[in-house]
Length: 109
Length: 112
Image 1 (cartoon, rainbow over the protein chains, first blue to last red):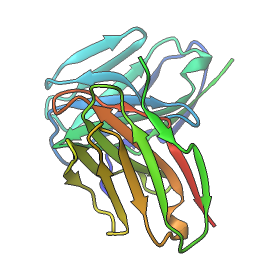
Image 2 (image 1 turned 120 degrees about the horizontal axis):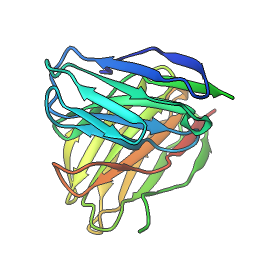
Image 3 (image 1 turned 180 degrees about the horizontal axis):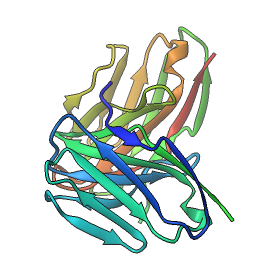
Image 4 (image 1 turned 60 degrees about the vertical axis):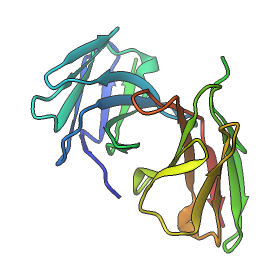
């Protein structure tokens, strides 16, 4: 099935460090989304991006929608233990989401 | 406000059996989508229903089917289960196009 390319696949960082992950696609999307999934739960929306070049923040999270509409990145500043989880990007197509391969984040105290 | 409810949370079935999963979206959310999540393939779109009609379908075999009722609740059915159908099945509701999705916690299906 179709998936967006997300990197890195996993990250192990120390509490307080900043984190950056990105997502690329061969297709153009008009909306990019970033989700976080905790173990045993469904994805929860973190940030939505609607315009090429748009930079949006949500607390310690910042995401940007690439100019070409084929990529996006997510930054997490000053990581804390509850940031642990899997982060997914998603491009919104007609009546469906195309998800990235995910970035697993581990935060050590 | 109640979230998206998926039942059951866990299920174990034998190869060849069939299974029905249920999803109740947030009140007012008329669209329900289903996704399959596996370690190998990640999150893959199955289908979306809106007002009891299938609006889009992913690339899954005909063994996977769904329906939506007048109260927006949706069911997903998988017939003749295979080992590879073991996955977390997630449903997501939204008001309609142009609105965001809210995911349920999923049903973990294990086929043995």
